[in-house]
Length: 391
Image (cartoon, rainbow, N blue to C red; front, side):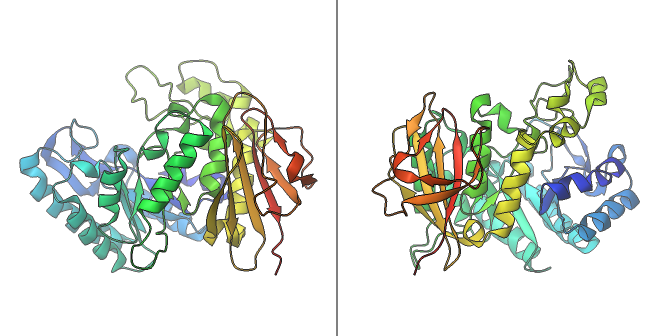
C-alpha cells in the first residue's frame, strides 16, 4: 500500500477518478474456509497502511474500489456451485464492513458464474448505494455475448459492467461501429428511449496490449475516452505496457515500468520510451496522448454527457459526433485501416470546416482549421475535432 500511496500523483496526472484495488483479502487457493473477505493478506500491508492509502486518495479526489472476487488465487472465482450461497452471504457482510471502513465501492469479477447473478448484483448495489449515491459497484464478466451482458445490466440501472464485448475481432471500422451501435441500442431504455450510463473496456481484466494490435493502441484510447459513459483501463494501459511476465508470474500482472530501474523486475531490457518517466518527457508519447484525452473528457460537457450520433463515412472508418445542449460539439474520426482514407463526411450535415483538437499521430498542426470535404486520414489515425454550436 505504501508503494501505491507514493504513486497517487501519477494517477492524478491521468485525471483518474476511481482506482480498483486488489483483491487484497486473505485467501487460500480453492479453500472457502480459508478465505476471509474482511481481513487483509499481510503480504499487501497492514490495515493501518490501507487506511493511510484511503485517506491520501480521498485528498486527491480519487475513489477507491475494492475487488472482492473471493477465490482470486484459485480455479473458480466463486468456489464450487454448492458453496456459492455461503460465499454470497459472506460478500454481503464484507460490503458493509468495508463501506464502514471508508471504501467508495467494489468490483466483483466473473459474475457470469454466479447463481442468480442479476438478483445478487441488485442486492449488492442496494447495499453499496445505501452508504451514499456516489458509491459504486463495478461488475466484470468474461462474456462477450451481448444478450448475456444485457441480462446482467438489466438487474439495475446504475451497475457498471466490464466485459470482453469490444475485444471481438475483426478490428475494422465497420465492425467496431456495429459493436458500439448494437450495444447502445440494446441497453437503451424501452420506457424513456434514453441510453443508460455505460462503461467501456476491452476486458474485465488485463491490458489493452493483450487484445489490440500495437498499431491500433492510440485509436482505442481515443475511442474509449470519447464513447458515452465511463472508460475503464488497467494500470499500464497509459504507456502500452505488455503482459510479458516473469516465469511463474500471472500474465495479467506484469511489473509496472516507472523508469529504467524497473528492468530489475522484468524478464528483458527496458528502454526509456517504455517507461512512465521516459514517456512523460516525450510530448508525442502514448502517455501524453492518454493524459490529454483524459483531460478533455473531464472538462468538456459534450464528451461527458453528450448525445452520440454515428455518421456515415468511408470504408474502414468509424465516425461520430458528441453534442450536449449549446456546448461545443466534438467530431471523432477513426481509421482502422492499413491505408489512408478520405473521411467522406461532406454530406453529413456538419459545418464545412472544423478545428483539430488532436491527432493520434504526429505531423498535424493542432488548432488548424480543416476542410471536411477534403479531409483524409493516415493509416491507423484517429482525429478529435471540434466545432461550435450554432442556433
